[in-house]
Length: 119
Image 1 (cartoon, rainbow, N blue to C red):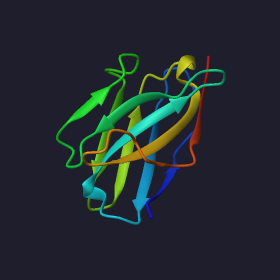
Image 2: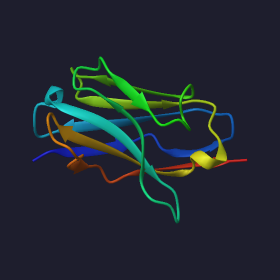
Image 3: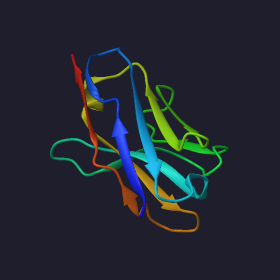
């Protein structure tokens, strides 16, 4: 069974940076597309960024383009989200998710890590 454990969240001032990490276990990491999602209070969960199984393809929500970078290290079974120039509106619980190659939906989720950006 796949397990995902996020870390790296916290409280940061606007303009600051954080780096989230997500460690994958239970299956072959390089067989999964990985994504970062977030959910702010009172809002629906939204995708922030995702990355292909080998890391050659990435995509980003318009709201984070140019500020966030998703990457992965398949040797360490870890996916990262580098968040720069953080804004108060980035405040949310951030979730790591895994999608089997060929699957339509993300089918494995971490427990989430809180990111709070103060103004």
